[in-house]
Length: 64
Image 1 (cartoon, rainbow, N blue to C red):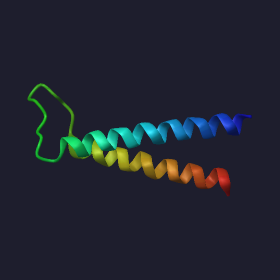
Image 2 (image 1 turned 30 degrees about the vertical axis):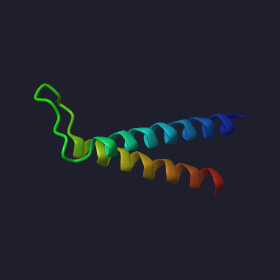
Image 3 (image 1 turned 90 degrees about the vertical axis):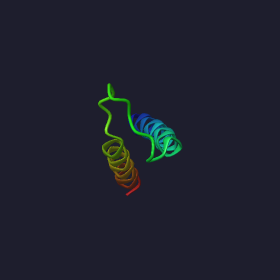
Image 4 (image 1 turned 60 degrees about the horizontal axis):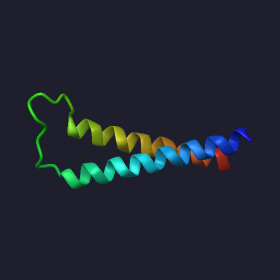
């Protein structure tokens, strides 16, 4: 039961990260944030990749 909820949560996170990655790709590297924005696009991409790797590790641990 708890593992089913964990799997669902991991799947939801994975879908959200996929959507964020698609949005970042759509924006492209040439788009610079507005001066009032404090978002670092390179750092955001790195964070998404890190989360994606963590989800992969969690899935492996759940199946292994």
